[in-house]
Length: 107
Image: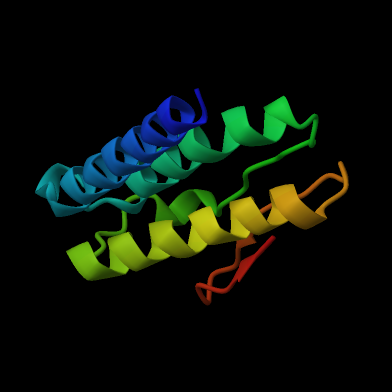
């Protein structure tokens, strides 16, 4: 039974990685607002499952900005790491990822 659980977990992880790769290379996802939607779709279910209050804020005037493929990929991967670390260490406290106009992100 343990072996099947490991196979299942590895399969889900592989599918998630492939989906991330496909999403990253699609030029339709260049606008920052598409990246922000992807971030929310990743974070909200995970944080809600742990009863962590979550508010996602970005300045309204940055959504139209176009991101290069690598920039978008790294931004998303960094965000995923931040969310996973928050799940490990937040202890149920509210977290608000935000960006200022200089492009500095806080969580």
